[in-house]
Image: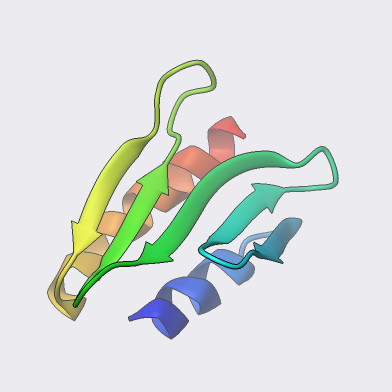
Length: 82
């Protein structure tokens, strides 16, 4: 699942991936406006998506690959706001 999400996010223009010790952060361009981060949890992925500039991020827990299509729409929206 992580690689599918990563491939999708990196297919968007001007995305920068920052791999940190406990999570992977994605931002748009060199202004480093973070729009999403992913961190591994027990048997799932915790995805934090910031869909609006001043709103707190939404936290989504992914347990199966079936949830990816809904997540892709949210990622696109967050990317456009970043």
